[in-house]
Picture 1 (cartoon, rainbow, N blue to C red):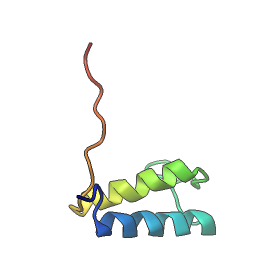
Picture 2: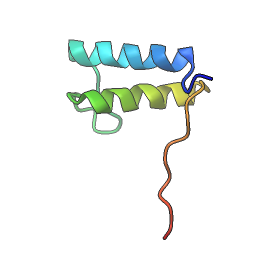
Picture 3: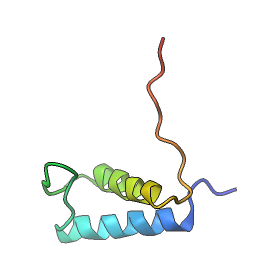
Picture 4: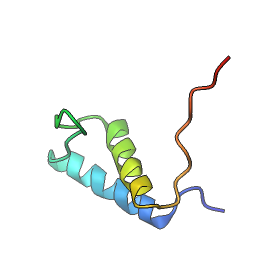
Length: 63
């Protein structure tokens, strides 16, 4: 069974293309995103908001 849905992969692909073009901006600060990892995180976050099949974010466990 697939971990991520097709909507999630489309959102990540679009975020990566925007990053490469230099038009992808981060959340509140609206700074240009240069990091590949950050672009993937933004794409997955957008997919989560749309209700796509994406695993939960890892939560911090109490020790």
